[in-house]
Length: 426
Image 1 (cartoon, rainbow, N blue to C red):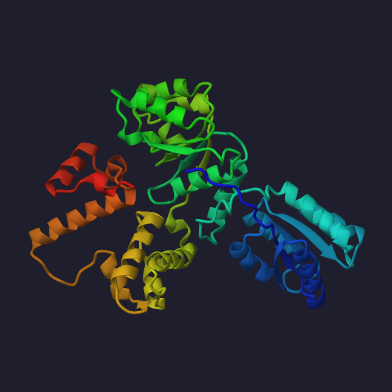
Image 2: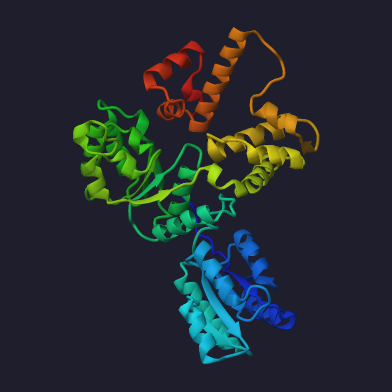
């Protein structure tokens, strides 16, 4: 789908414990049509960055508790591409040296001249990767306060402006395809198509012709190779030849890191072709599992509840603290996709304005009834297989790997329980 370009307003976070100056800076910047978030402390600034996602931070140097240098260091650790302009009433050489050595983009003394401030803001925005002709927030689908995921998103955004091939590794349900779409939205190819192909469904007989057609369809845009490690090695080698000279940007998703897949072909264990890797010379982005970003679970739950309310037109339900605690502590082998599936089921099938722990447990597939052993085993197996296919969106190879079964045995299980994988594909 082709996306139209829309102008996005630059976001500026202003930090100063002087209420008068904070108000003055806010007025000046808003008069220039910037979106401004004013806060009065470094602690509030760190909380605001995760939610407001500014393109630039302007901060006072001298503040109580955490000063501007400490704030700058923390911002650089979490969001290394975010530019920071320092302000201080003490325009001494040591202050300027300390700020610039710490990585401040610019150092301005108070009282700041209006034109000087605006000139530095414009310059900082130009070098921060901000584009006022970008599509409506490239990463809007991601709800996060995780420094780990922010690091991955920052890397992806920097790669988006290039034409480098990107391999996105990670477990099922971590958002690999969502990140691929986001990279395309933020890229110079955003006006052209993003065309995807499910590599795990291709075989030697007709796979090469399908790849050739897909590459032609993606000309000028982005080619998304879903589950590239499921593509037979001979087809990967042919793919390298088909991509030679093709005007496409390649993004691929993988279940595991490149290093774990690209072993020596002689051993018979390789899942990635050396020819393809040499041709693409890809840059890798690894999506963290939900277990490594548990601080995001409340945000993801709220995002899902917002989506359900918008889709159904019903009042938004909320999670009780006990239900949220249950979600935050649970194991999520299917990661964000599985979490959203459970929350969506609880939000659409449960009664009452508040989601309770029993409703969460029911959505997770638990039951208080005591069926016979064979019945319980069959029901558990069927529910387990269905959940795997929901998580993998009908990708049998991926579902079989999650179940730690070979693909042939997995197909037999599906047949025995009357489950059609095509019903789960989107």
